[in-house]
Length: 196
Picture 1: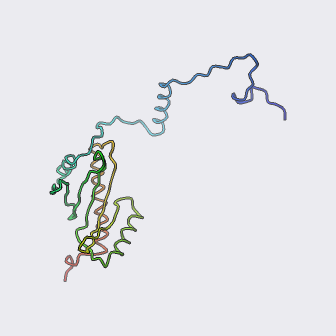
Picture 2: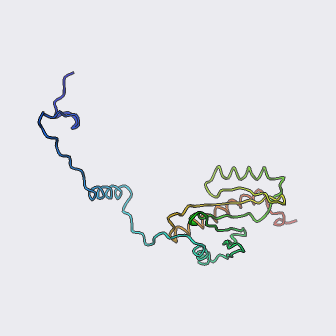
Picture 3: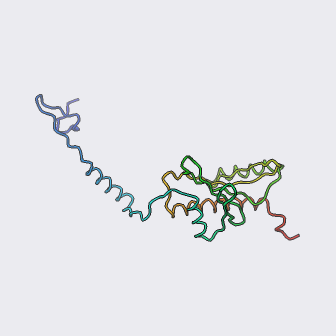
């Protein structure tokens, strides 16, 4: 096989004549790289608008303010936990983690289930969890043998959240929890809610 002339070879395979100094390679400056990345992102994603609000730490006071702004009733229990009723179901709003950066919205179905139905309720929870991201559905068996059905949405907010982000997370926890409880209501209708 005949050797290719240098001008047809890729630059990294070209021979240098002895004594030729290597050609200086110009690296782009940080400003040029930044400008190239900005142009690429603008072309692919569209032009980003400046944020009008920066994320802030989530606190019980911000959650309570959101509840008040949306005309939801809420309370603070003896342990200092913030809770409220949403469509007749009890929900709590917890902040966990070393810096209270994990927001958890935990709802409890408004009725109890007999222990004899535990297996079928666990099956319902597993089906829900297999098909959906939110909420995480599970049960708790109390000391009296009654089963409580729980829905939970947890989000790591290490970098905080804007008011709009916090609102979306709170609505997500409440609405998806309610959807799960509606499914439980369909499976186990309230006997007192039907005409005798």
